[in-house]
Image (cartoon, rainbow, N blue to C red; front, side, top):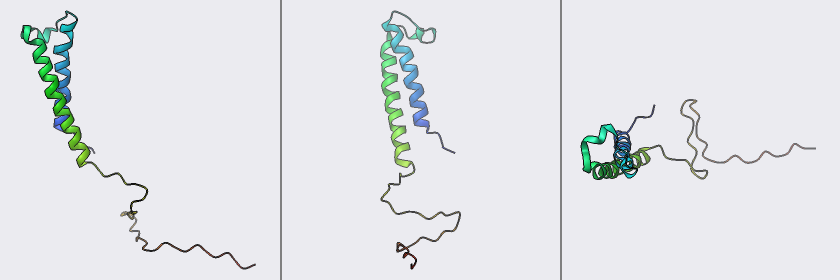
Length: 100
């Protein structure tokens, strides 16, 4: 189960709330929930979007750094731990053709 990062969640919420405070004023509209800000609605919305974006990016960077590594095609193969498979140290030679 993947654990949620609070920086990503909080940053996304702050980014959305900042957008709700900033963009309606550009179209001469006002949201009831942000009406109490008055003339400070756009600066507060812009500040919330910047802080939310930084928090969201920081959370995503943490998730990326702490995530499971990606195994490339040239990396060593890890044996299956559940089946107790022993790793092979040498590649097997191709089988000889049967005598005719």
